[in-house]
Image (cartoon, rainbow, N blue to C red; front, side, top):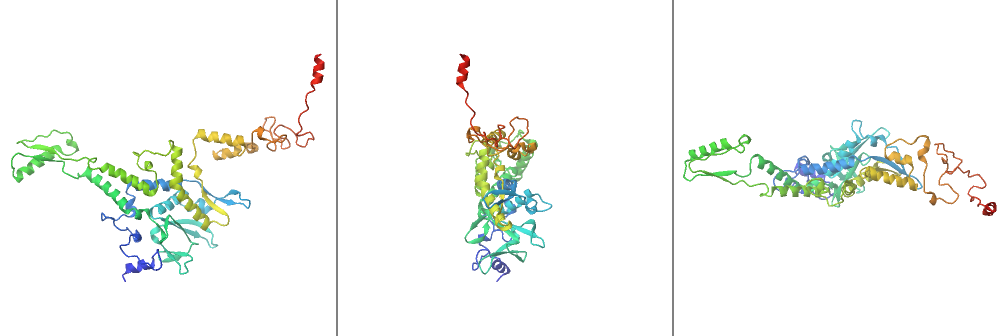
Length: 441
């Protein structure tokens, strides 16, 4: 058995009995550049990124997730969710790397390879101190003999799940590793790269003759070449653009150049952009500006569509895997998706006004959402509600500022009444109309 076959059998990630051969497309980029497409060229991940549409899709998705704020929360016994201080290894996975770079690397691994592998660096007490995103090509997955767990082989060394956080993307039942979009759409990406190369050569060299010189006689070879060279010298190149050419001896020029539209070049390029956008689940109008959007009429609606149908699957996968394998107890990791769906200023302020008036948010909570400091002296912590919703004789909250001077008396309600007064809550005495009538008489 060749060394290649031995290597394939030893790192086979698909099953314990199945052996993959050189021509099996599922090998993908396992050993480097990947299998060649029909054109004969190999579509590796690095070559795929040379296609503008692929780069744009990966950039949009990776940037869309990595730019989201994130944090750790906990669920209390009563079911209430409270925010916690984010662990240092999540707030700053590496001392020399910003969190946005870390999550961007994770997303690029998911988008290009279909798998993200993160080495959890631990101290002597087994606590996580840093997170390192690994090159997926260095990692192979093996199922243990008991079939109850898996292990990872990295450069000949084995690690279990306590050391490696593995996040797969598109999964199928016949293989452990997540499928790579680049491998799955190898032919489509290769076609897009070939079309780009065709366009570059078309404008640089030309894919056909620009024209022919027709001569009524039968010139000798040397005469024909001299006529061609003289015409080319006087009329080709940028400096001779729009120059007037002269042919003698009855010769004439016939233009046979075809346009890119005639060759359907532009239509093919446009179709490839849309197909690559479809592959990555990105709205086509975000990849090709010539395509109009049919979802919503504003930026907010388009962002909501992109977040819901393009980003949410990646967000959910990352949140669940970090929560299940890195956080203890009932703690959970979460991205703040609302940061992408934030409406414009007018709409936000209208929503804040409703929230304050109906009493489910106070002014300090609103100011916190706008990155502003709380109101001094705790005045922003008061909750308001319409008085017609309050029970009769009961103030809507404890304490108040009946004089409007900023001084809160915790023993009085918002109307300045003392709840300890025996007459508190009783209706005011009615006016004695009899005495009023007697005085008029």
